[in-house]
Amino acid sequence: MRSYKVELDPNNRQRTACLQHAGAGRWAYNYGLARKIEARKAGLKAPTAVDLHRELVVLKHSTVPWLANVSKCAPQQALRNLDTAYRNFFRRCKSGVKKKGFPKFKSRKRGIGAFYLEGSIKVTNRTIKFPRIGELRLKERGYIPPGVVIKSAVISERAGHWFVSVRTDEEASPHSPGSEVLGVDVGIKSLAVLSDGTVFENPKALKAAERRLRQIQKAVSRKQKGSGNCRKAVAKLARQHYRVACVRSDAIHKATTSIIKRSSLVGIESLNIAGMMKNHHVARSLSDASLSELHRQIEYKAEWAGITVVKADRFFASSKTCSDCGLVKEELKLSERTFKCKCGFDAERDLNAAINLKNLAVSSTVVACCPGGAGRSHALVKPPVGQEPNAIQDGVLNG
Image (cartoon, rainbow, N blue to C red; front, side, top):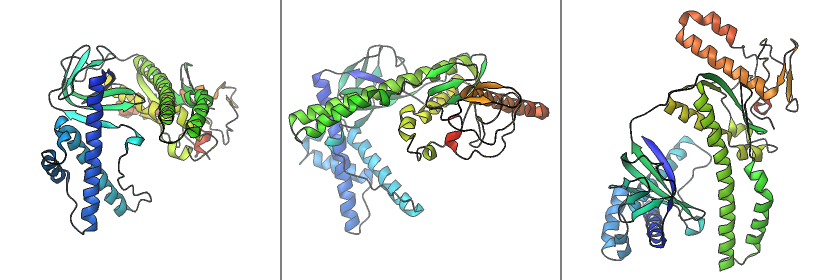
């Protein structure tokens, strides 16, 4: 299974049809949640998604005739999602999780949302055809391979832009991998530093747009709630946030694609992002860099290309270890941007960490492929000694 997401170019009639489908899914979700709450208060068993859909079929021919104008898939999937959310709530209650997360009613004020479609979905080089909605133009031609078997599609809206994500069933076709073994050290100052010295700069999209976002947010707060001007200001703010997300996503996709095209073996770190986010001095910069997304893209793109990814242990001291002699420093301050070892080795901190990750990846494959090569692997990977006092002091954060 593989998914493709591409922006749509609907006309006014098609945009109205998409809004109707999203509204039908939202209404069905709220209807089902109200029925579950009502049954729970009455001491009865909560109705399932199948029971609720049968009720909707009856309502469609009586009090809610507009449901007949949309595909049955939109409310059906909304009810299935409600069932999943409802089960997850009770599962969290039994496990003793602090945040239980009872399902909430969906509001149009929080966004248009998305809806699910399946059935006869056909795609060409320039268009995609859905049941009940018709044929919509694609903004990116040829991105979805024509002729693939499309199992389902999710149409969503964000900041006035409509997108479709299709799930396909196709044979894996890995391209010929590169010949390089690369270690990848990610961080804030630079998005990624490779073991060969290549640096992918961090665009710092949120930081660059902070001033503009603050101005628009002030304009929103000064408008009368519910007025037309308020809706315009909110839409403007949403477009600015969408632009920030696009700048960040573009940089990450370009970096990860370049890494995968060049490499035959990749070494990366295991990051505890949740723990790092507790440091409020760097939490915003961490969110802006989106390090977890960068690692996620490296892993799934490597899987598509048939490339092995070796993840270092969380406590592997990649920044503190000398990549030349293997000596591990007891202390390495975050302000020390250059790694200097007693053996005379001198290198940029992130580059040193990336080389250590490369050595780790090489030694892991030697052990896996050559059972008798254990001695050789010890010569390639430097022994991690001790645990760093703070994960933020590792080579992960270089800002």
